[in-house]
Length: 281
Image (cartoon, rainbow, N blue to C red; front, side, top):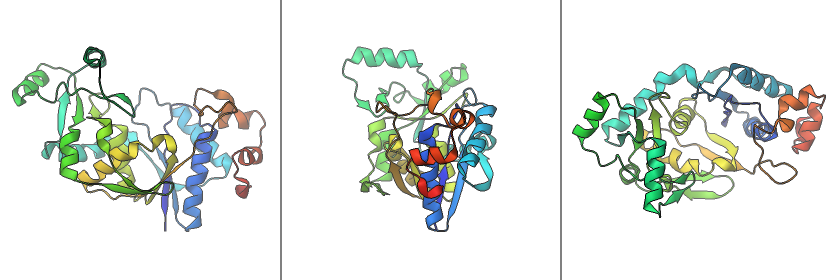
């Protein structure tokens, strides 16, 4: 049986693209007599709002979706992410990065030819070469830092990695394209990459259904799975829902949020037809 999940962040109202992804995920589980899980990814408490979380439950219920209870809220489980960080520390794969965003941008600009990855210019590795004493002195001095993954060493230790994608077949993982990713910060003790990989394992997710905009992130997730001994689910990255002009949907486009539509008198059936999900009517 398949276990899938829909894992939104409560930083705004869900739009039609979220609805499509949630329906896609629920359908995958339903066809196998499996389980559909809802997870609230709210690690960034500075941007997440309780009212948006409540709207998620209301919007998905309005669509006719049901999910397993209780719902996992990542902010209730921050201590869970300490163990995988400790394991990576033990393998000497993490290092503290004391650079500010401005300092990183300045160094990248000065280089004139910084390599780029899916998230933009790669971190130039400024703090990777600091000695143990230099790191300890800066921590003792109260310098703020993020924990970065030494990507080259992590990839070396993990060896060749692959995953199965329903749209693209067998994929070779190349996490190096992201450079030394941040896995935790002082104010947020985990990152999206670490939290989602941990939770997919903890919740026994067997099929990750999500938008094609998150396809590249799977390279990093596959690496973390290998390093931490986590299960590797299959993946299905579906095409994105776009507006009439062809642009991908965003939470800032209020006219296409489920909250706006259902409070404007648009019926559930109209939304399902627009998304091509008539079989749920």
